[in-house]
Image 1: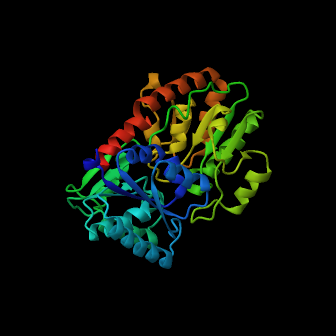
Image 2: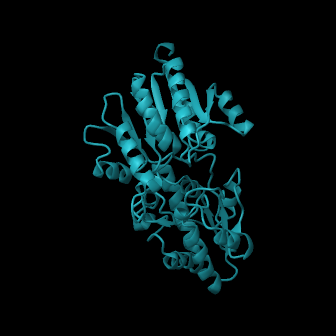
Image 3: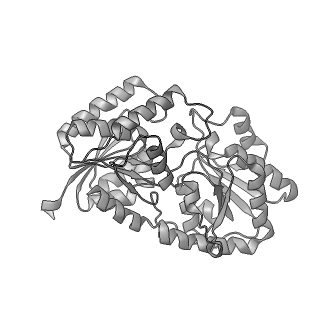
Amino acid sequence: MEKNRKVILISCDSPRSLLDFRGKLIEALAAQHQVNIFTPAISQPAIRQQLEAMGVNVYENALEPSTVHIYADLLYLVDLFRLLRKLRPDVFFPYTFKPVIYGAIMARLCGVKRITPMLTGLGYNFSGYAVRLTLLQRITRFLLKLSLRSHENLHVIFQNKDDCSKLMELGIIGPRNKVHVVNGSGVDLNYYPYTQPNCGQLTFLMMARLIKAKGIQEYYDAAKIVKNKFPDTRFRLIGAYEKNVDTINEELYDRLLNDGVIEYLGLVEDVRSFISDSSVVVLPSYYGEGVPRCLLEAMAMGRPIITCDSVGCRETVNKLKRKANGFLIPVKDAQVLANRMTYYIRHPSEIIRFGENGRKYAADKFDVQKINSEMMSILT
């Protein structure tokens, strides 16, 4: 075992993602290899404690993922270079845009033998719904092409086929690139157990950051339409309200807080009890997802889903009618969203059937154990 033990460096843009999205993978890697984490500053002691309990070495940086900050970005590059020279890792695993772009370039310069960048969705930078490319989008695309250029040590990981095809179409990657497509980050079926949906008082739940491309406006508008016909229906929203290039406007935020159409719960640490209290989970996103984790959690717990026929989201809906677990709707269409919600209100028995199908689909396609086994083979 000791002979095959490798030094692995993981770079991310959010400490929360380490446990929420990669916890089981890090645990599996740390059982066989020396794992090091390069992360923005950890403000929650529980995250640090859990990582250290796994035997992981934690190194912090000043990266700001959602904003362009030249000084912080340059400092990240310098710190990463020093860390790569110090650790001399066998494997470098960056995920999300800034760690992928900066990290893949720096790891190549430092001669890392296996570089495995993972794109967990393309977000705004490659959205087909933008009227024109911004300067920032152009720069991002150029840098991504530079960082992902074909190399024998480079293995690019995607979470859906659409993202891979998009970068191929744009010439950012080519036929010589070594690419792998995995089914998202997966979901822990034991941590998110099946529970019976609430079919008494129908409750719709959305879990997302309060940004426009997640479909917050569409969810609000659809809720208003449905409440006019079915006033007892409950709508809930979980997610952080943070300053971002695409944050919802203050008027909509004020309505979420005060007009009673939607019950806004803010950011919560553990969503399981809220999923258990819900009937159906909704995500009308056109953001450019990898595979939305919130939908996988909902499916694992036996909830039907309604989501957009958009990149990443469409992966979560089984297209076989007899195994249907939810509905795909057009992007930015509150009326169709309201119609699908109304279907569940009028056919509550379908909530159970769709939910059971969703649990089976999650077990077949998105079980974190299966996905991590595939990730282990790619990384090591």
